[in-house]
Amino acid sequence: IGNNNVYVIVCFAGTFLRPFDNEGFLMTNFYWRQRLLKGRLTLLAGLLDATDYVDAWALTSQWTGFLNFAFSNGSQAMYVPPEAALGVAITAYLNDHFYLTGSISDAGANPREPWKSFESFFANTDFYKSIEAGYVSSSDHFILDNIHLTYWHSDGSEVTNAEAGWGLLFSGSWFLGGRFLPFFRAGYAENGGTVLSRSISAGMGYQPVAKGSVLGIGFNWGAPNESTFKTDLREQYIIEVYYRAQFSTRLAVTPDMQMVINPALNTSVSTLFLWGLRARLSL
Image (cartoon, rainbow, N blue to C red; front, side, top):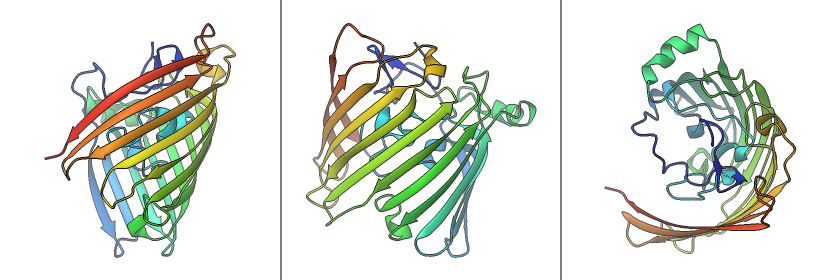
C-alpha cells in the first residue's frame, strides 16, 4: 500500500526495494550543471532528483550500498519529492572545508509526465525546499568525509497525497585508514508525509582494498510518523548486512540480509527476515 512517498512492504513501515518496482518507464533527472569560481560554486537547474544533492552520503545508493531506505537520504524522516521535479540547487564552498547547499523544487512532480512539472511548479506553488551546511576534509572527498546538518520543508502535494511538513537531518561519516567508513545519521520530521518522525542509524562500511569489495553493516531505530499512518504504531528496529563482491571493475554481486525487529504494522510477529541478491554490470 503506498504512494510516491510511503511504501509498506511485508508489514513494516518503510521500503527496502525502491529501484525494483512495476512503475514502468520514469524519468529521474534532466538538468544543466554549471561550475563557477574554479569549482567553488555549482549550479543544477532542470528536472532534478533531490536524492542527488540533499543529505547525500557514501553508502546511500541502492544500486551499490544499503537497500533499506532507513539508510538512504533522509533516513525516512524526510519528504522526498518525486523524481524529475523542476527546480534549482546551488552548492557553494565557503572555504576548503565548509559548504552550503540550497534548493527549491516542485513538491508534486510526476516522473511519468515530467514536462508537466513546468506547469505545476508555477501553477500550484507546492515547493520542496532544503538548506544544508556541511564540513568535509576536501571537495575531492565530499562523499566520504562529510558531516552535515540539513533542514527541509515541504508545502505538501495532492499528487503524492502528502501534507505540509518540515524536518532536520544530521549525517556524519569519515573514511578512516583507507578501509573503514563509520557513520551516524539521525532525522526528525514534523508531519510532511514521511514514513518516520524520528530516526537514528549507525554502522560501518569496510573496504579492505581500494575500489574492491565492500562489507556494509547498519542498524536503525525508527518511530513511525503518526500523521502519516493516522495511528500510534510501535517503534521498530532494522539491521542490514550486505557484501558487495567486486569480481571486476564492471561486475559486482551483492547478497543482502535485513532483519526487522518489532515491525510496526504487524504486531503478531516480533521479527522479520528479508534476503536479497543483486548483480550489477556497468558498461
